[in-house]
Image 1 (cartoon, one colour):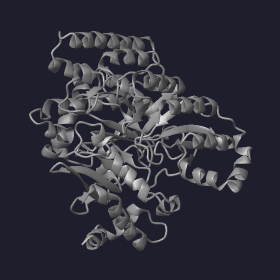
Image 2 (image 1 turned 45 degrees about the vertical axis):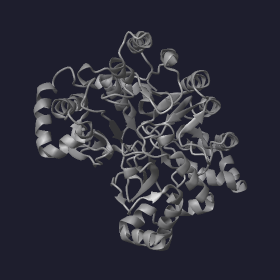
Image 3 (image 1 turned 90 degrees about the vertical axis):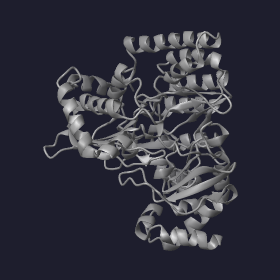
Image 4 (image 1 turned 180 degrees about the vertical axis):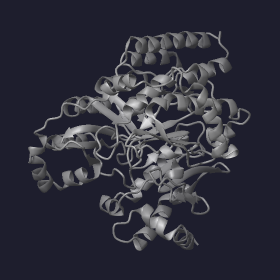
Length: 552
């Protein structure tokens, strides 16, 4: 995991003191609200429905145990005892007092954390695969490149006021677990015909009001050209993106309006001007950053332990959890282990201060002191010995962190919705509870298999409902909450936007409608098919006919 140097620490400390003075002047009436708005957004501070909300950066999803304990302390001291993990692998606090936010930022800086560029029209947190560095199918660990991008983009003076927010994601293998195709820039680590490792570059993806799948702008980019090419893309966007209408200001609108070929020409012309400058990335710098992510000193005898097989044979609950909530590690004798933040009738992504402390303890004891956040609001202990899985499961289960539902219907990705967010059109948390109660039978949920259910409280799509196998969007109809349902979306390697099944349904009918959708799948699937496979084979019409025929 990357460790700050003196320059990194000084930058973050100085930013804390700058914001402390800005906050003091605002509260004293010396700084107008419209001027303070831009300053607070630069430091991750929003004004939500009930209170300020502080978004803390979790660079490419990586946290260490010391940082988790600090987050637990902040939750207890400055908030209401919990935090909320987001789809950009950040953590949010929903109840801080404005006057205390500089103190929170100072606490964060003491453990090499900050809230810089977690909001505003700038380059946001770069995200990647939660299994980076520990999964066998990747070409190369993407985290060093995420860190290189973070250092380049942090407080980049030219890109502090882009037309709109800007998001980058990196994937490194055939299975895209970072939703790269719905980002402003998506990077795929690939190997060319000569055996060289570099990047396929996609541009112009995004969700929100105008969902778009990104397009390839360059099939292969040498590693040394990574920063110069990114800079060229964002310069072209910064100069040509719309600023007269925030709904048409994202790079996806520019690429769609110009066409990918014309956009590529502008980027290539700009790139030619800067590619041989100090933006060229030397191999020595890549190797320097890679050193922070070198493999741990794994126990070579771990695979010889046979206790796992005994526990799997003797304890069915453990076996179910093992099958659902762990993933094969590239090192024999180890297992990638989920910490489920989707317990029954609790908001998705929420974690208490006590649970943060507990996960920190588990990381120290069982996973080299590191934890990862996923873009669908769970946590991962990436390096657990298989001989220690039973002990880890027992602790997680005793603390409501082991629900065996990863990748299933009830592993919902859900934004806070109208209960918290001032932008939301409808509430989401009660609908998630309704779905959980309707599909409480885990045997049935497991039989349904892999299903991505994403629910957003408004068209901004913070929970990526467009690319859920099943998507739910909250809409307002004359002051009442209604919900539009889409089917067939996907954020993986075969990314697709979901299709609206029909007219929206009332709040009380959401779970019943899902039951009808799932009945079509159960009736129509062939052996081994996931929900998304069946949808792609039969199309939307059988689902639409059954849902609305039954409704009528």
